Length: 111
Image 1 (spheres, helix red, strand yellow):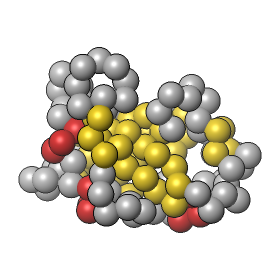
Image 2 (cartoon, helix red, strand yellow):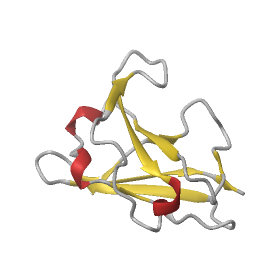
Image 3 (cartoon, helix red, strand yellow):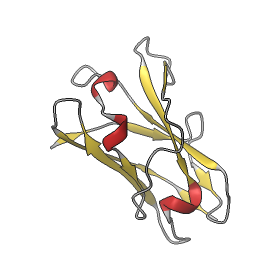
Image 4 (cartoon, helix red, strand yellow):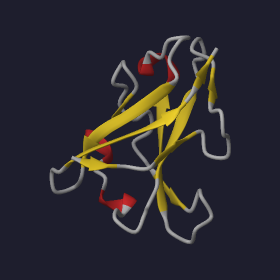
């Protein structure tokens, strides 16, 4: 399994999430020296304990961490992610375009 660096709600350190929200949660898969985010099969990715699938068919490729690499931003419906008030992290799991398993977690503050 490939361990991913992910960033939930890019630009926020505590990643506050209102578990009652009907909005979406942005999650960035970060490109690193060891992994290219473009290799993620977005259709095979799930997020949170509810295993939410991507809310938008289109992913965004942009540099969210300012390191000059292109990262992949996916959006997941908050309700479908099924996060609980006592959750301290949320995880993304899936596959690459060639079928390798991937996973990564980030801290969250669920309200």
